[in-house]
Image (cartoon, rainbow, N blue to C red; front, side):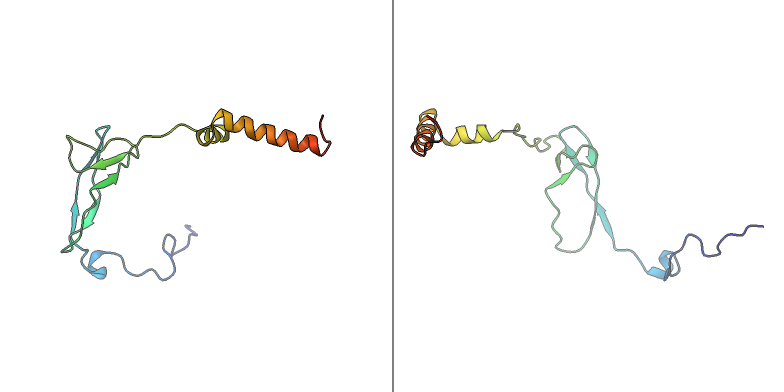
Length: 116
């Protein structure tokens, strides 16, 4: 005895399956994009009149930008190393500026009697 559910695997409101019931699918165009690692990505686009194709697409294998020319793919993006808060402060202020701020803060603490 099978004892299973007769509508197993379908969902509520599911209609008949197949292209004959849904109609014809839109015509598509597969375009090849190439990344710097030599991967080829072929996304499908609609063949609508006047549709603009993107010049770059993300590679599905490595995530690098991919272009239309296999001999000249886009360069990988340059990632900057992580910077600490101190590194950003040092970009904005010189050592002399930092020393002046420190002296000013220490003078204020001495004036209030919090340090000697």
